Image (cartoon, rainbow over all chains, first blue to last red; front, top):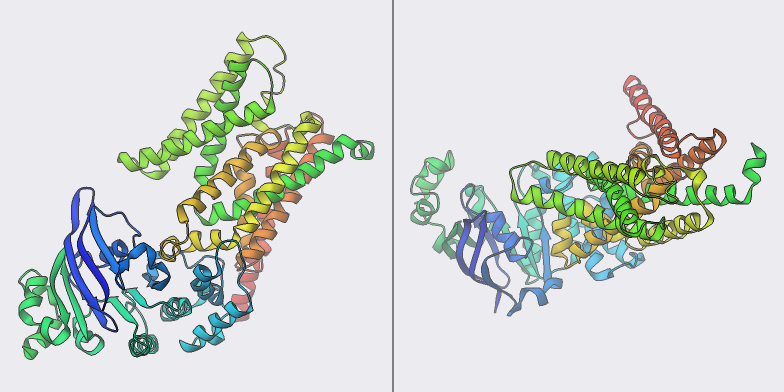
Length: 250
Length: 288
């Protein structure tokens, strides 16, 4: 069964199309990298799927049912830069937010929820920092707090927006390890990613996107020089240093 | 002085000022973190034409009617600001500034019209500008006290939801939380506190009572829960101190005195606050 099926998704900003008639399917238990140049609409795609921004058209099915009926199954890791890290709260408190959907309105998190949140922090190697104010964490540590929050949510399909940006090696390792664990548990992961060099190491599926999908499928089939040229506007100059690596592989 | 404070009416006014100050400190914490301080100031100023208009239409002084008018024009101002930002090239700060001025100007025009053209008892209308605790009657105080209590209870109930929707609204939406509804509740709380507070603090300065206490509280803690309560306490202390001083010094407007008290607390916090206060920061740098 497909974990995610997107059909005819169109999103515009001020009447300029950002995503045009996007359609693709993602199999259950896959690790998918969403790849494309700047402004290709990668983050927009995730936000439109999660209905965080308005769309013109589009049908989204999660595990065979309409999105809004499957919200509980969906975990989201936003870009780190999208929140105010000066907010007066601790790492544990942020992770607890992953449980808010389970706790329900008005009710307070109980012992069980706090236990789950602590366990999630431990899994990403952040248990010592649970009481730390979030602005006093490094970029990588902040990213791990976001990961722990997604983990605490216990979702079936995860959407991550540029999790590898500006993180240290330990955090990168933690992210990869977590993605692998999710995959082994049969969960599905979609990651907005921009480092072409690591695509083949991290992901078994790719979605090449430039306003509409150029290709979607298993990495060894879709992640080809030809497709990349098409995605990045036919010129590999945009790829910078990576172009050398890519040319060797082709 | 002690005669005055043992007066039953004064005691009620003091209780009202404590409740109002606490509620505005609590709600102000959310407003400050949501970066809506300026909008709340515009809303406060925009209540004045609502009050004036009600008096012009019904030609008598009725606090419930005034509150309805105040709510309507405050919401109208908020809506205008959002409309301007969405459909023009005007930036947020300019949109807020212009809407605030237009509504406040309209309010002053209405009040002037009333003082020139209507008969009957219109005393007390001017008190809405700077606030006058001494002019409050028992029913006003009761409304302030009960209103504040309701606002505090709502803040406590939705504390967890406000925290997540202010910190990370997109994530909250992703969880399926009713973010729009929660934003409306928060807007309702702000309108509520402004509307019940204007009689005591006045439209010009009520926003300061929303913003200054949480700003001070932020210098003492890194936890939202503690910040909210501390901010409430600072608001309550300012409220009661301002009311006492303005009642003793006959004719002193209450709002400015309350805001001065809140500002003294702020100055103290800025200097000595345990979290990023000026002096603790200098001391810890030298120790290193």
